[in-house]
Amino acid sequence: MVKAYGVKEQRRFRTSLRIPEAASEKIKESMQSSNYGVRERSKWICEALESLAEKDSYWDLIAEEFMDQGDNDVIPVTMDEHANGLLLLTAKSYTEHTGKELVDQSVILRTAIIQRLVSEGGGLVSM
Image (cartoon, rainbow, N blue to C red; front, top):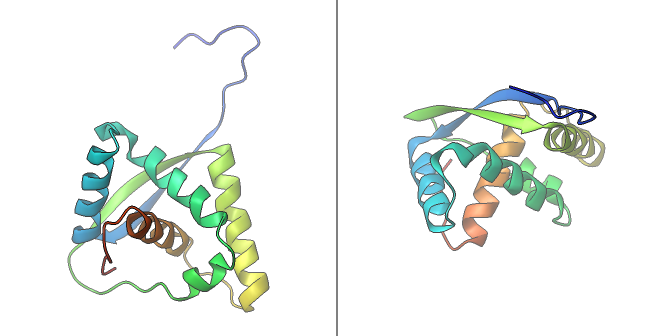
């Protein structure tokens, strides 16, 4: 890949996320209805994270997140520096407001996904 002169290449951060198969299907449906391509799932998830961070008292939503045991999918997520910084800032804010340390930052991403699906009218998703 050739980089244009003077253009700084942005770092990418990779993580994985465990979600129920049903939620994975809901994400695919949402992406299709919003004209996202198959390779744009990480973009869809990062946009969901941005939307979550804009909500008042989002840390309460994160605190309520739980995931049922059962059949889960593990999906890779690639974030740019902005989304990764937002994830870290959201985790820090959660700790400051609840007094609890997050063990797994994927809780934030799952909450963001749930909130995006609910706001799009996708109904409740059991995580």
